[in-house]
Figure: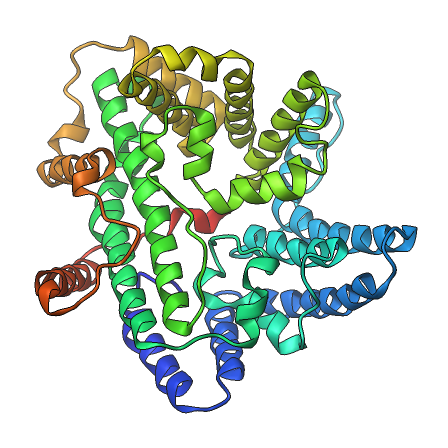
Length: 468
C-alpha cells in the first residue's frame, strides 16, 4: 500500500483513523493498522519480520540485563546484528553475488550457477537498520528495553516510516511509543505536512519521471548532450522531490498519530561541500552510518589515514545499501572519496571562494553522481557521462518533441525556484492556520485537489526509495 494512491487516501486512512480516534486501545489499533498496511504489499514477508522482531525483543532483554563489560553481551549483540544483516544480505544481495560468481565461472569455462528466485521485500533495508539500532542501544545502555512486545512491534512496523524511512533510532522514539501525544496542533500541522509531501511527489516528481525515464532508457549512441542534461536535471529534481515528499508525508502522518520524527532533509542542493551535503541529504542514514558504523570503526580517534579509510568503507557500504549493483558501489565510493578530499584539503580551500561557487561545484558533482544512481549498468553510466560532456552536436531529439515537454520545462523551472531560492522554499515548520493564515489554508486545499486530479488522471509512479 502506497501513500500516493487514491485507495490509501480515501479508503485506508479514513477507516484507520475512524477506529484509531474512537477506540481506546490505540496502541493495538496502531499495530493492527500498520500490519495491514505492510501486509497489503508483503503478505508473506510480514511473518518473517514479525518472527525476527520477536527474536530481537527477547534477545534485547538478555543483552540489557547482563553486566557491562562481559564478553557474553558482545557475543549476544553480535548474534542479533548478524541475524538481521543475514536477512538483509539474503534478500538483497544473493542474486548480485551469484551474477558476479557466474561471470567469474564463465571466464573459467565452468557452468554457471542457477540464479535463485528471490523477491526483494519492500523496505527491508530500513527495517533491518532500525532493528539493529534497538539491540545496539540496549548494549550501550542508551535506552531501556521496550516495556512490552506491543511497543517494540509498533517501533518496527509504525506505518508512516515503514517502507522508506526516515530511519528512526530506537532511543529517539522509545518514550513516545509508550505515551504518544494527541493534540489538535499535531493533527493540524501533520495534515499540512502531508499535503506538502504529496504535492512534491505528485505534482513535481511524478511529472518529471516520464521524461527522466525516457532519456535514461534511450540507447547511449542516440543521446546528445542537450538531451542528456535535460534528462539528468529531470532526475536530479525528481529524486529530491520524490524522496523528500515521502519523508514529509511520513513525518506528517506520524505527527497526526502523536509521534515526532526527526527531519531527513535540509535544502541539500544548497550544500557547499560533500560534507555539508550529507548533513542535509537523507540525514537519518548519514547519522546512522556515523553512530553505528563510523564511530565503532574508530571514528576520528584513529590516525588521519585510518579515518580516511573508515570514511571510504562507510560510503562503500552506503552505496551497497542503496542497491546490489556496481553502479551503487561506484556512487558510494565517489562520495566517500569526496568526503576524504573535504577533510584533506577542500574544506580549507573553499574558505577562499564565494559561497555560490562552492555550492555550484558541489551541485555539479552531486548531479554527475546521480548518473550512476539512475543508470541500469555501470557501462550505461559511463556512456551517459560521455554524452553529457562530448556529444554537443545538433540532434533533433525526440525528447524535446514530447507532447508534455512544455509542462515538464515549467515544472523544472518551478522545482529549481523551490530548491535554490529560500524565499520561495517550503519552510520546515508548518504554518499555523490562525485567522491571519487563511491564504495558507486555501493554498493547502488547492494543492490537495490538484494532487487528487493528477493522481486520478496520470500513470502511477512508485516512490523511488521503495527499491532500497
